Image (cartoon, rainbow, N blue to C red; front, top):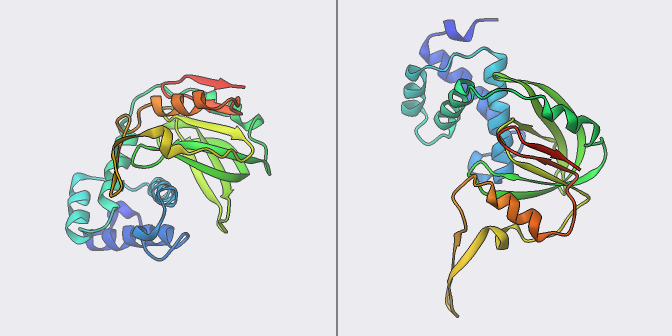
Length: 228
């Protein structure tokens, strides 16, 4: 197989486009038509393809992608891939503990940040869980699951610096009401704004404190992991 890094730029662009389109087509016809969770799965799959093919993401490649695919999310995905690989945070082994907690076939509610940094809730059934390498992380947590009313299996890759809370069963609560505040409301319009900035861990704290249910698993950022 031809080494990606030895291709000329035209072939590199075509190759990357094929990788991204293949990921998108697992969920729908266009990227814009996907939900936030599906977009996150597309991005993770694309990043894995980059790693599997030893793609060297250079500034020259990113600029070429921006010019050729100006309306595509590909350039942003490449930039984030570089940022992940350049992160020097110490790797922990905490995610491996989740292997004995998240059992295959169990119904769970996953609360995690969307790619835009705001909490989202997913009712799903666990298909498989494993700890494996992702970029420079030796123990990324791969959670494969089939969301409620979805036909395809999604895979979320949880890295040591990410916040995730998992509840046993399908828990119903209004995530939006806990993550936003109403600025103005009258008979014509309701204006809301986010309580905190994107990826603020207080979102997760507010959700857990509002429920009288002990989480099945809580993964805290910055190497703090609590299992219950």
